[in-house]
Amino acid sequence: MTLLVMAKEPVPGRVKTRLSPPFTPAQAAAVAEAAIADTLAAVAGLAQLPGARQVRPLLVLDGVPGPWLRAPIEVSRQASGPFDARLAAAFDAVATGPALLIGMDTPQLTPALLAAACRALAGADAVFGPAADGGWWALGLRRPDGAMLRGVPTSRPDTGARQLARLAAAGLRVSTLPVLRDVDTAADADAVALLAPHGRFAAAVRAARARDAGAARAAHAPRAQRSGRPRRPTPPRGRSPGSARRAAGSPTGCPADRRSHATAAGMPARRTR
Image 1: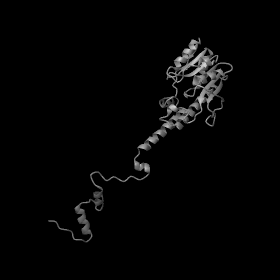
Image 2: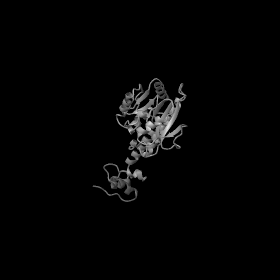
Image 3: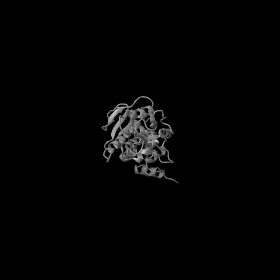
Image 4: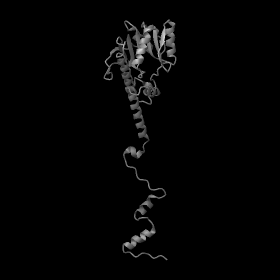
């Protein structure tokens, strides 16, 4: 079986653009890179499970590999054209055997879930993993055929329903996988990070949120603090700065104190009648 992983090179401004705002393009790219890393870690873990050693992982990449790609995996270039054509071409390129295709938007994937998808495909013509937003996160074909995907609109609330209808119209027996939430928006990123809190994806989301919180605190700090100048102390309520200075020359600032100071200095004190 060939396990196809569709992914896009994590270049700021080109990947996960719906995360911005609130994330910056650089933060969105870091989140995307972490999502790919966690997905490929799940793929690597699949090979360690019993009965999964015949799986051939293949990263179908829009872009070029670089230092961001740390996992040892075979890479092929995505075809050109709209996304449905790219998906279809990935299936058409599989020479023999069944194929299971996943994306980079579900970093909460586990080796066990991938193994379940492979087992389901062994007993069905196709497997289909619906996404919570109406799309799909996994599609497997026992006999890979790009015609099963070509022309199906993508990135729509009814993409999953349309894809499932295409499979049914071809007379394929479809096994359905669990629904997963994929990452398109910042709210999706927060939710998925909670589902898999120990992965690189969750760490990247937390780092982005922490930087946002720090920037917000700095923006609301008093101007004197932002400039580094010490703040001038505020006089006690009900007294002017002048009265505070006058009071500073005597213990209490009252006339009786001034007479005491004058007597102590050798000056005659004024009598009162």
